[in-house]
Structures are given as structure tokens and as C-alpha cells.
View 1: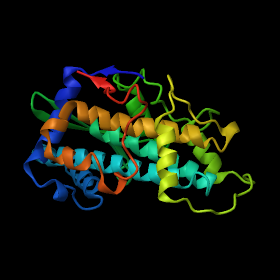
View 2: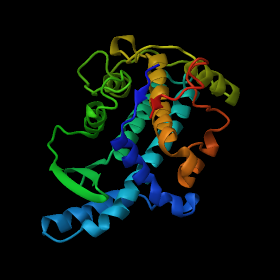
View 3: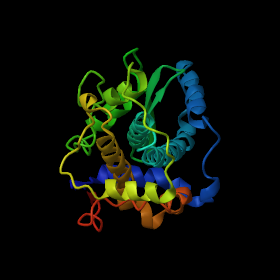
Length: 288
């Protein structure tokens, strides 16, 4: 297990990101659907016209945090779907497992202050310096697709650069998360489909328990030539969502009402304990 040391800058950033959410009811803290992307479009318009918009940044920063946590919850949900489809549909188990990974990576990117605007064709960078938020809008090229941009952002962050569970996401590689997803999504003449036998709750719990207890010293990236490489798809997805949770836990869990409520989604409690192996269960992936 890789243990990453958090520097003071990242700790301060995460504490500042979650602090405003400690002053309101956690169950009502999530804004309406697409609130962040719409707010960023309005911000971009003001920026383009040379209008002042800095006073809006604290509210937008709070939405970066809620978007991050919501995206992580989507990662957990997608992982449950993947586990439930392991024997029923290898193709869709693989796709759901990939999206669990992607949502965890995107959650980290949002937490770090990055958002790719689809309609505005910009990549937003939000930074906090000396108590003041700054916002930068970088042009987005045609090659800056979501399933590359967010992964590249996280991989280039110094806290995750050495972690083999985070990597750039290139579809042309044989060892590639998105390449394996592409095989499941788009390839013609996939292997024969198994007889449809829906799994029960015990089978899902057993599958997740198996994945969480597989020991690995580096990330077993799925291989297109091993499709359906479901076990490796699920291992890396599980490790990534646990890493997000461990990071936020290490910095804010004891002092933030919003995260205490949402770090353990009620719809996942019967299946998920967010542990990796017995040896690692009592340890955090991050140290201060």
C-alpha cells in the first residue's frame, strides 16, 4: 500500500473547500443539477466582457466541493452496479467498473479545483491563495476530452504522480482503463453472452469483499487483450474510490458535518466498508 504525505498547501485547500459546508444542513447542501456548469458559463461570460466576478467565486468554490462529493458517490454507485453484474453481464460489468474509476478521478479533479466546461469549451482552474480565490479559463482543444483531461490533471498533481492507481488515460495502450472500456463498448463480435442469472445481495457483498481483500503493490491496469478483465477493472475502481475517501477523511472528517453525513451513503452501507486488506484496514492512505 502506498502512503502519501499531505503537504500544508493541499490540507489548507481541502479544509477551505469543505469549511462553508459545515454551516448548513448536510442533506440540503447539494445544489440543483448542473448548477456548477451553469454558474461557470455565467462566470465565463462576465470574464469575457471584462466584468468583475471575483465576489461570486466563494459560492462557486463551494459547488466545486459538492460536485466532487457527488461525483464520488456516483463512483460508489457505479462500483455496486459493476459488482452486481460480474457474472450476469461481463460487458456491462466492465463498463460500469470503468465509470466508477472515471468518477473517482473526476471527483479528485473537482476537489483540486478543476472543471472542464463542455458548452464553454474551457478548462477552469480555481485556486485559493492568501484567502482569495482566483479563477483561470484555459482554452479547450478538440483533443481535450473529459476521459483524458481529468485523468491527466490528477496524474500531474504531485500528490498522485507516484501512485500507480492514477495514470493518464490513453485509449491506444493495451494496458488502459479507457481502452478496455472501449473494447466493451464499441468492439464488434464480443465473446458470447452468459446465461442471464441475476445476482442476489449476498453475491454482491461476496464479490466486493473478494475485491477489497486482494493484495496488490501496484495498480493492475485492465488489458484489452485480456477482455473481459473484470477483476482488474474492479480492483482499480475500488482502490480509487477508497483513495478519495481516505484523502478527505484524513483532512476533514472529524470536523465537518457535510462529509460526516455523505462519506457513508446509506444505499451502500449493506455492501461497502471501504477497506482494502486486513493489514491495511487500520491505516490511512494519507499522512499529514
